[in-house]
Amino acid sequence: MPQHLSLPLSPCSAAPSACRHTVRLEALTHAPLFASLPADELIALEGRVSAPGYIAGERIYRAGDRAGSLFVVASGAVKLLRPSPRGDNAVVSVLGPGDSFGTLTRIEHCGETAVAMVDSCIIGLPVSVVRSVLERYPKVAMAAFDELAERLEQSYQALEQLTVGSADRRVAAVLLSLSEKLGRVNEGRIELSVPLSRADLGAIARITPESASRALGRLRAAGAVDFGRQWTAIVDPSLLHEIATS
Image (tube, helix red, strand yellow):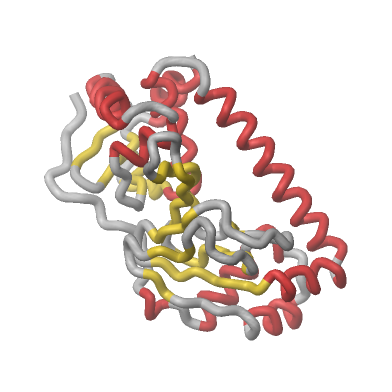
């Protein structure tokens, strides 16, 4: 039986004041979209971004707002929500450092709502600036194409995985996916550095919050995960992977 932690895990977050020049430049340097840019172009690009800090729970933009920017997570974590058939907002994606969201096209309105899950530093780049870079640097344009293709492939894989199988399998797959973006290894376990409600987990796994809660309980009883208020940890990654792919 796994030992349960008595205190929440420390979130890997960044205070809004942490959106310093060095943080912004490092985030752009490591973002897959801009990795091929020359150093002088990266420095010039960093000078044209906005980088406000957001506290946990603060909305970055809302579905229906006018679109016009591409965003990059410099530190912290962001969740994207879309209206569900029930009339509430359901989580469709969780993003970590280096991930981009928003738009690269000339669409007029945002299709989802973006919310900071922990204190986060978010870089905002006007679409006109990004498109100018794409036009001048073919490698960046190809990186943008590759990123969009990868997102589409991941969506297909997630849809296939989440439309079949038990609740346990779906929750296991979601936790493994989140651990790749937001996991932090600590004494043999992988801690997710963001608070994850049962409603959020259920929405991502396409099951009810009650089913997500029961699935988590069974995964903990099996020794694959542990959890508490505002924290989740993968205790046995191999076992969780086995459950996700069974």
